[in-house]
Image 1 (tube, one colour):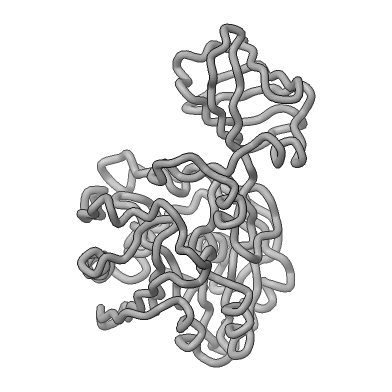
Image 2 (cartoon, rainbow, N blue to C red; image 1 turned 30 degrees about the vertical axis):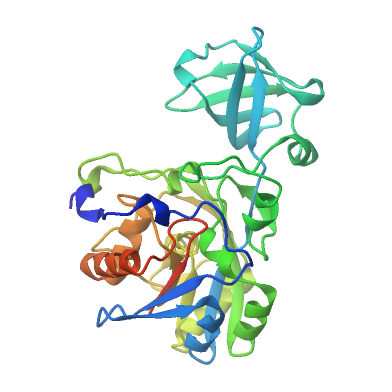
Length: 337
């Protein structure tokens, strides 16, 4: 299949630049993937659509304040997006104006921290920080890394609103944005009729990057790390045995569950995945999917198309555009049954 087969027209004013005034007030498109029919709702209604005793799985990763700014010896400012710490002080990073940055160049950061660019493999940079950065330092001096289609700088409100209310395990450079719609009150109502459990997948830059190959079969996903507890694996496997539906909140949760499954059984443990879910994939764990509206030509749009059918999804997206749903990270939501 061709990447251009997963495109749609989206007016720029429908790309949400800010979250709703209050968390949990987004619109919700309910999509029946078997019939292709959809209906309009609001997020507060979501618990009503859950079958009694179903299992709802969330990704509890937390976004790190990983966007930092350094200065060169000439006084120029350079932006870095810290992706992963290889060892204490040694970070993989996305480097602004990467081609202009020379290996061996030094940068100064707040509080007397310095770094040197030690390598530029692939499309990344590797920096060694002296002294090594810790969580407290990034909390004081880093910024939340909003995606590029949000055309503004992150402010203090994003530190709270670009995190899910159940985030626990820090390590992502982007939020599992389907989870941004949930409030403690909505979670309480879900627990009244369904079971809840959590996985952890640390979202990397590749999850939201566009597919740059002409053919889907040539696309390669970046690797992301995940962890599934014994308790979660037991809960999912028990639901499968009892034929209770498993609902994945967000594409990162889908990817985690499907990556850790074998013959319909979920394995506990820590691992990494580069699974690219595209049409023709047979889902082994997930029965229903709660998700946001995704960017054209992205692996996320391809995944939901694999789940519900390309024509069904694109028809639903066109309907959402017509009704002026808000799109992407701070936008509205879709529940695919």
